[in-house]
Image (cartoon, rainbow, N blue to C red; front, side, top):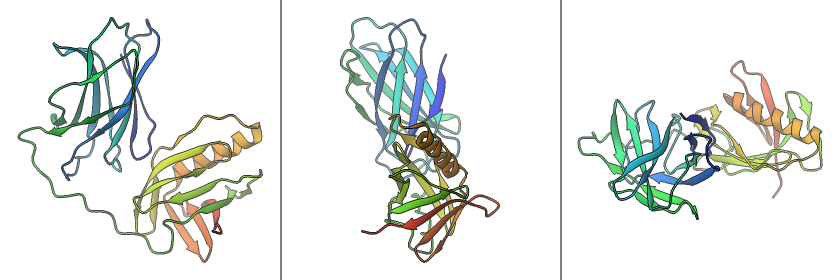
Length: 253
């Protein structure tokens, strides 16, 4: 039985699999392919731990790739199945339209006793139609990208603390900053003045309760953003009704 939870950044996938009979083992890394082709809506990433040399499946799980997901795809396979001495390998598949689109031909060796990150290169499965290259969305008007913005208010409430939250969105649409206590990362999707953030991943430091509450409010607000407005050095992140969820100002160099 598996439990799935999206955690990423560009696209980070947390895959939980197996039973709770053994100590928790996390295998992580990235999955990527070199072809410049678009994934169909609802495509899924599946990562499977297999026994070598016969390729017998031991544990695996799948997660849907968000529409804004791009390779490399980050994964973490949390295995709770009791393992004997190896050898083992990892197999990654990207599925869509009822068939396997990408897969690594041979399992990539992994040592559960010393689980270092494993990067998996998958290749197009014969018969997979090559789609038009993914075209980047038009960049929005205004000087939004590659700027450090400092949060001044969340839901109309002024921020507190000596280190206010920040936001920056790079030209490759990777977003991140400081959330009040922890650093966070997410992926942005923009078309014109429409702006949406993917699920945010954050570090796990603990701070004063008021800072943790402010951080939770900020990350929740980011998840509800659908647009933005820029007025000089001021930025407002808006919800679907045009209500300002977060107020920010351009930070000095």
